[in-house]
Length: 125
Ligand code: SF4
Image: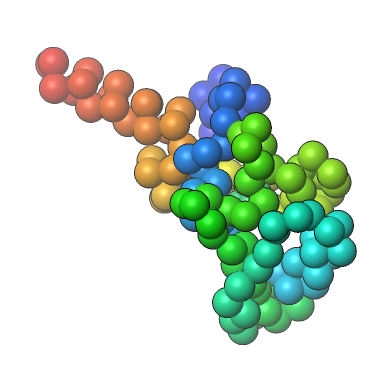
């Protein structure tokens, strides 16, 4: 994707929408995140998944319709303490493996706005 067309997350004031569903994290990475001692931040649902380095993944818990690592000021608690431990899917979103994620149009405000604009342009033709 051309860089001028890339979504600029730093222009977004909140991660409220994109953090709504939480994220899958490698089990070993989750252990390191838990060691940060972030109040309220937690994981659930351990699953075997060979796509993850440890062979297992866990999901961040969801509370009040957002990830438990989401903070009231609209940012990620992990990101604030140690960016290197922020889940890779979160760092990459709204992209996934270099392409726009299939769920970005539901969770990303900027991508949703682009779809709306595109739709109204084609409706007015
Ligand atoms: S880990 Fe952080 S960036 Fe990822 S969904 Fe949770 S709050 Fe959002």
